[in-house]
Length: 442
Image 1 (cartoon, rainbow, N blue to C red):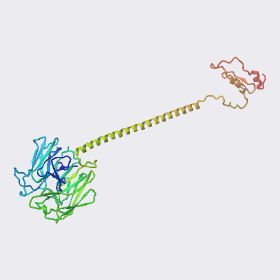
Image 2: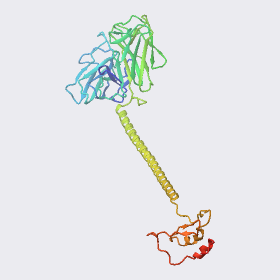
Image 3: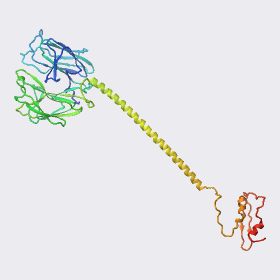
Image 4: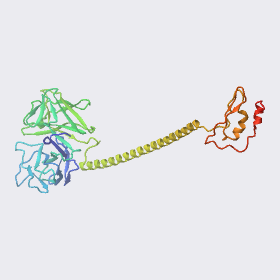
């Protein structure tokens, strides 16, 4: 919760598990108490309340005093003492005794029983409140209040805002009355508050001695939280039992809203009364704080901190495992992709190599002996010597020149140096047979 340090207080109600009781304490419901109940000791009883103080420089003991009987130092009505350990000489105490009576002209229904200041926020103290009831119950314990320092965890604390807190916004129809309350008699006047928490309580305070109003009729007002339907509540006027000659403060709960989800909410209050009805007065607002990631509040803040730390550890482990699994999956996918691509590349190379080999075979095909001989038109001059050519491929062939007027003339060219020497055996075809085939006898 955002707050101004000097205006916000943490409330430790008398039902808190942070308090340890010793003795025969008894509890009773009280609608004027911040805790909704008060505790005291029966006549003749003695008991103590222990509390660990940390993260603050001051602490207030809140309680109720009423109808004291005159007593002397030798005959007090009760004894109320306070002790801080370890002892610190810089700590200042301001306490109240028990020497008040019904003829003293005043009584209190709401008061600070003690104020302790000068604490070191870095230190941890133990507060011991001891009450000894020497007569009928005259003092009741309500709650402890302190101003938290930034180092103090307030995730699950009850936060008290006075009526002049800077977070509360009033319109121009509200005024500040003696007694420390904001009040309005105008119909339609509004106030608003943005808060973080799961519940909120709004209190009023009567100062019956100063007579803030002469009206005796109850008034009415309504509240809205977020977008909910308006809820009407009664603003009670003091009754005959509340009005007297004594100075009397009466704090009372106007309404309470609970069951809210953790997070930010907005409270709006509108007054519906007039000058003829009792004015609407606001003295205090108490908000039950709660972390946003928590569905329930209350209990020991240390236990909540431990649960949050364990949750953080489990969350970190889960995140680490998830990241590791994702990395393994990505690596497996990359490996499979690389393997498939490599196989495809090898197949492409093999296909290309085979294609090149086929192309080279087509371009440089060897001599085919089965190919048909070319057709020669005219006089077959070389057909008769084909046998000789096939049998002796290396024997040079002499060009044959056919003359128009005479027999064919064989032109014997000069032998080439590379031409192998002629074979010694004679061709099976003699010159005579060659001449006979050509129709001439030489």
